[in-house]
Length: 106
Image (cartoon, rainbow, N blue to C red):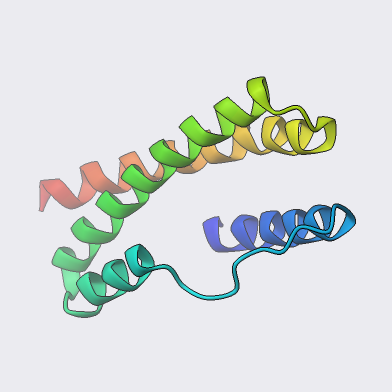
């Protein structure tokens, strides 16, 4: 679910950025590379715990950024995109928290 919705959101953002002549990064950040390394070395429930922790923290940060864009952005189209994306991000955060709780039980 998250992968499908993130892929759709990225496609929407890419289209919006293109209309505004904004180029988006095309390579993974150092933070992303570090997360990959952490996850790559885990398996089973250890993977689940690490992954869910990354998803909870990542979605919390994304929600903060999108809330700021939804209220402070001066570009109306970007403001609308951020506002419309927030409910999905909040749902993803809820799911990530549920996963995190389940992984911590084991």
